[in-house]
Image 1: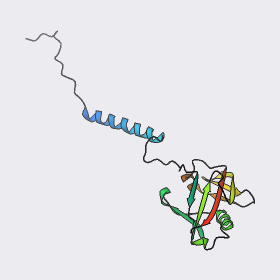
Image 2: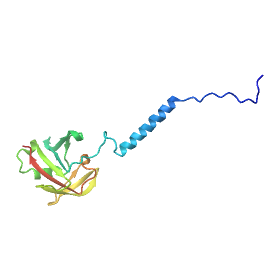
Image 3: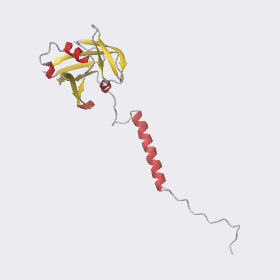
Image 4: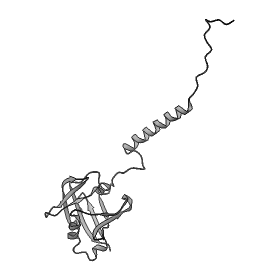
Length: 163
């Protein structure tokens, strides 16, 4: 005969490994997301470059100025909306510039820069700049943010032959 007043036998708690695995995976993913947002991870980071002076090599393709930068994932990135005309001005003394030239640029003045560009306004993800010594202006597309975290108030440029 059983005594009704005797407590029922209890079993050991069961571990729910499946639930625990999902919880741990979720916490790891959240931690990785936070670390990525805080730019603490050495990979997958889309920080702009930290160089003070940068160099690209524009050339003409199908009648417009373009450039490639494999480290930024840019291939035949076109210059548009007034910038091709600005480039024409700075390369006027470079023979065969349409085959390619070196464009040095910085947000800080550097020795022998040719032109200073002054920020005018943002528009459609890009930014309008004008030559400081003329009314020529052009729109620099969002590819700029591969080089700068935010649009610099001034850009300094110099065009040189490739050789």
